[in-house]
Image (cartoon, rainbow, N blue to C red; front, side, top):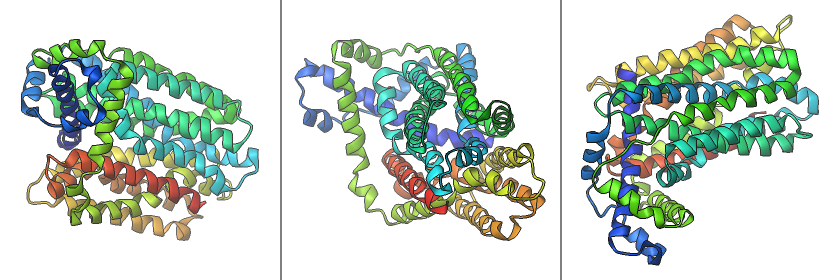
Length: 438
């Protein structure tokens, strides 16, 4: 599947980053007592050993099947629930606006944080996965997300929802995303592209299935009951995360893992966080002209790309005779469009003669032009349905192609650092754009 191969490039980037961190731990332990190393010494040992040796050891241990298929199923379920819920927040948006009698801009801050926080803290989520492993991070993320949504049913103000849903549950989602993506790369090497593609397809399927479910829960139990039940659904991520059985890794990595058991977990995490922050400040990446332009283009894109997900249901309800059930279908159409778009753009992007950067620009342009027409077609539901379908297809380029573009701009070795900076740029833009639109 071409889509899977495209997504595999992003996974390989994360895999190399985490492998580098493991290599760093090996170097620390080989010096003697790790606890005596100053933070500056930790930073100085970044990338001293060959990542190729680590990846080679990992490849030798990846089963490419067996329990890996169970892990893949768990990853699919995690993406299905996590993205299914987050992209359905727009269904609850009108009810929350009406209940608290707040402005749409203020209420939209909840959804904005829900989309932005996972991108902003993704580098730190990588650090947690590197330090503690995929299973505890995924389980912790599932618990945090589920409990946060359940507690949110007691919220007394929009500020409460911003803290509980927008920040706490979003942090949990970030932990789920990173751990669920990386565990697949551990269990699969030769079939990594196929496995990764199947796992992240759960995101599009969730975005297709969840909006009608959330709308029914909202209609039956009101938004508070809906959040409580959704929290229970998200706790199923814990069960999925428990399937992420640690895979024994031979050679230097295994020895390093045994050696660092005696090191303070907090010190390990601190060292890895410093590693991430130092990596994000790469001068060669930040001074790359094409990369700076690409970041600016993504900043503009993410100022508005989340707006349809938050406001489209509320807009459709302004049409005479429109029911909430019918309005919620608009989000499902966008989810279905994303599935199609990821496959189509993955196939096209796999053609060497096609520029991935140009393809990215084409998709973003189509999505932008369609969004500009929304004020004109706002009173025609069929037109809004066509728009959301096309929007889902076009905007899928932002899921499939960014890392491919970064590799061409700054090279594979620097793409990890570039991707972290790009993710944070997208998160900040999302944080600013959606409330302004309200």
